[in-house]
Length: 282
Length: 155
Image (tube, rainbow over all chains, first blue to last red; front, side):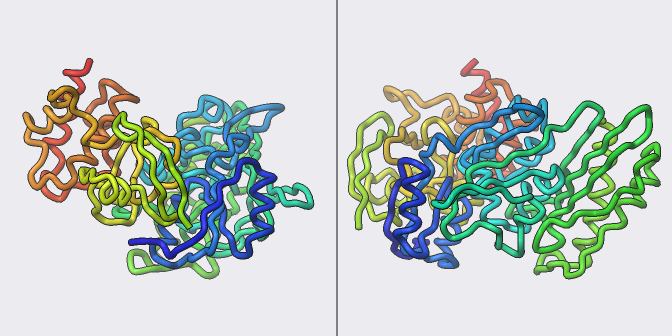
């Protein structure tokens, strides 16, 4: 399978990439190409120009400062999964990245490309929404950030403007007493999540003081579940099951592999297991 | 348009002008005649096209040749040295890690990457490391044995 013909430009800097975006209508940015190239091979995407930003080292890397972690948009899933910084401060993000595809895919795919593509079966979006992460965008007119919960707008639709580049993601570090987990029911052939559940639980003195659950795969965008009923409890299995059963999707997505109702059901089961795993790690 | 690329393939310098849409696997097979990297699913799933790019296992059906400009690429043809099979090649031979052989080059390069990261993997780690490579003949058991054989030889 060949992609349709296109012109190839390689950007040497973020500024050059922004200029190329302005000069070439309907151009697409390519980082690792692991969302875009498959789309182009299927001719679902036929951009006239591809701007290769894969060599912009300024957009690569993981750091922590002042209780917040920063992940550059060109950081590969392999680097995120293996990051000591994330293992210490944001382990659920590393855990989810380690579940993406396979070793080869993780070596090329990037966090920026992944979330800009916004596949509902992607592992990263629910984790970013759980963490309350912010997505940072740059355009010729400046920079802005958007909350992960607002970034994902619909199936394959995000808040990235036509003249913008996704530069990095910031996420609050998870503190002591907080456990987190990402559990995935994986499509056996594609490796995408049929359902993925990201959970966090904070425990102080044997009591829950905060909890979160976001499920991917049931709707076009990550679905947050109200699990505030857990606060003040001792996080018994029954309390967790009751909280996770609150998963509700107004318009669940379905396909030949898994209907919408099935996805909601599996989402509750995996939500329960993710919360329990987060509790056990807190 | 064409893109000028310079890269190293199996230790030898290569220069070429390629169409932007030229996939790395087609470049290797059709332009360089290195047909070891196989085209299986063409959808980034089966791993038959796996090669090493700067030491990292990648699926060459999901990478443009233009993206490999400046890189060092290793294919199955580059593993044997001075007529001696690489320990992984020897392992697949000794342990009967193949039947039809279509997946084997990709399997061996993924295993090569795995052993570079983790020189003595257990069975589960081998299976996880080869998750991106699909074999429809063997049931994987002997592939795991072949990788273990190579890990012992290489340690």
